[in-house]
Image 1 (cartoon, helix red, strand yellow):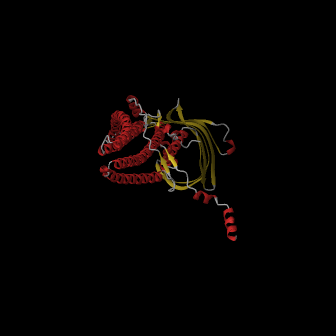
Image 2: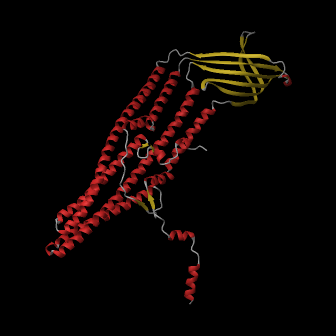
Image 3: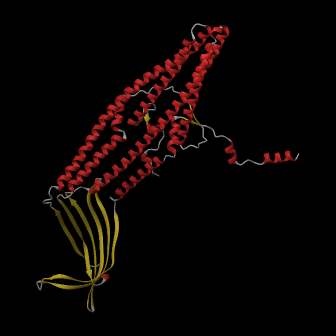
Length: 507
């Protein structure tokens, strides 16, 4: 009685949720290509790194764009004390003399600078509004001479005959962002291709396991038929023994295929970062509708819209910018500086805003290179070689890409025809296996002929798998080259619902 009561109390105690979860096996994860890509990209460190790179280059572009807007700065020298002797020319005495300087200076410079943009084009010039105020004291014995100074003025600085660094920096920042976005897209598609390869390898192993079991099942049927034949004709009893040997070999093939499938599943679970206890399930369905690919459209996509070709174009443009800047180094250049404003100097601070006088400055400075032993010329030549090499690489890549795409489309069409033929042949081989078993029971064919029919179905199934895997490999390669999924009729990124690089990091 006490034992029954104790058992009742134990069963009445609620089992913790965690214990229930551990006790109940989790449902198997059914893998499709889309599901596998989703799981593979979900926690990918590589994708996150690429996203951070896109965000970094986007911030750099925003910094360059912000640099084209107004800036406000305040420079303060408070205080600046100088008590020093220095040689200075005395025009009255017509000789140098040692002059003792003892000054106290407090200065404030407020400036609002605006790069000059005309019709959206940076001119490399800067326009600024300025205000300079300082207090200057010259100490001479017991007497101090203090002066206050105030000047507010407009200043304009324009570099001439030199590279436009404002425009170049902005363009390079835009190209840098585009490069990181293209790298993001390229790597994501590469990850999708790797995951697709793992998925179809898993499908292949699952299909081989299924085919081995089908072959074993056909041999079971053949043994049953052989025993029926032996019961009617004792002289043919050895045929069942021969089939039994084939059955043992077939069972070993099933075990080997099951082991290969299990190892592949473990590899996939590690790749997808799934718990070790998780069961994965994949359907070895090889039925496909061959994709129809227009070769000219595929060539156009590969030559114009893929990141690889665009990255080469960006590299060519970056070399053009570097060549322009190299030509500007150690070359003739000129700077134009203009200021115009109002100024007041007075011993009293309160008079600094009364009775101002006009003030202006005009400064033109130029650098004229005369002789540098050919340094500038050789640097320009070296950069020109880099540019020529980039253009050749771009041209060669476009040509190789077109050839590659045409070969891939031709190979894909060939595999499509083989796949269609093998589908029909496999269906016919299965019919022949069934009819051969019936005819073997009736004595119409021999054991060898019946075994040939069963083995022919297995061989046909293997050839069908080879055609299917060749078709999928070629189609994956074509997707990687064109970044387009011709079966879905949309880009690879759109088909798998991956976030585009343009949306990374944006709120």
